[in-house]
Image 1 (spheres, one colour):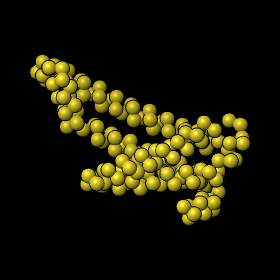
Image 2 (cartoon, one colour):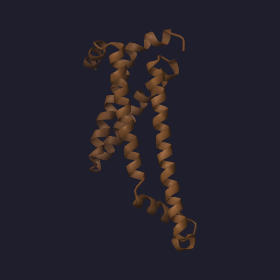
Image 3 (tube, one colour):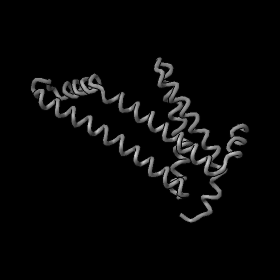
Image 4 (cartoon, one colour):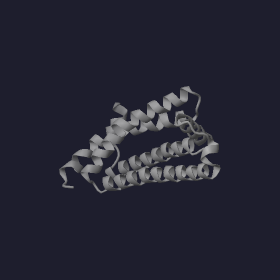
Length: 163
């Protein structure tokens, strides 16, 4: 931990912001990309559709293939829109943080302090199940969490300024 504090102490505020935002954007791309590829495949949709139809006592034949195809397209668009909105929301917060807005600093602290460990544990669970992406998520989660130590160094200047 002392090494991290010395590393962050040696960075200028601009360098830290560049490093942190780059790392957070990379994490967003990997996490949101993983979510997209996990849930956008046809096999996943077919499983969910089959379970939903069984629960409701229906069959694919009773719904019609055109309806199922339209529902699949709606599902895909909804997934893309949701992921895009999450990414845009994060980009807005990163930009606001670079402009020293206090609300954005609080969000970044939450993202690094809670999101980093969650992503790391998620990566660990995927790694144990044999998925390579687990190692990537584990590393990104730990790296995001370590940003918390650098945030403390630059927080004082930002909190003193009005938002």
